[in-house]
Image 1: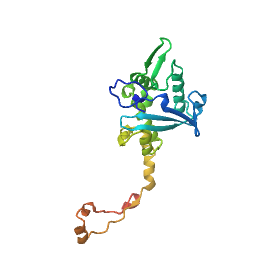
Image 2: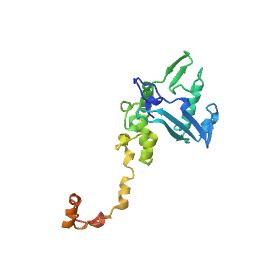
Image 3: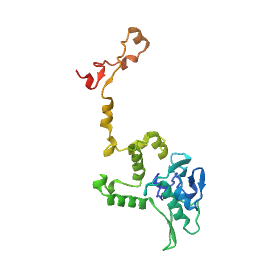
Image 4: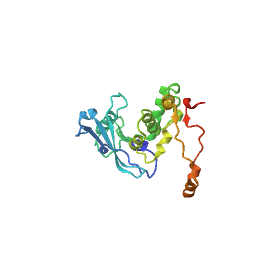
Length: 235
């Protein structure tokens, strides 16, 4: 998700609308689970509706499924967020999810994108550059979005699925796919050996009639010295 969808930014005239509890639906099978029910933690999936985005798309619905991971489970995270907001006085399901109420001061505030950035940088520092290959100066609020796109790519998720789930309307997300990541090329060398010899079907000779009928065809006709490529083609 974009940081402005779950945290308060300083951007003026922001087009993208933040997520609200009203935009979150939990389901078990075809059954919709109430936000007040503890069963929402056991939901099969959670549906998030993005009311309005900067790309102009409205009412865009994305479904994320329950995982068995203790930390990275969309259903558990959203259920926890809903319970946090519901615990505040005068709860309103139209509040943005970044609304926060401090019980010590009895004052309400917003969780800002700068606070999110601090937490991300602290996490990177805690893990360490030796493990990650980068440090806290290299990350920000956009790192979450980029990181999950990279994780999906490395798991062999189809590119079109990454685009649809990330709500990208173009191939702009490819700039988040970092080829210097060690795991990026894992297995590529082995896959190349799967078809290490291949045969090039010879192009038929062009005649004067062909040239007369196609002015541009000749430029695509390239001479081929050898039709078998790879180890078997070596003479």
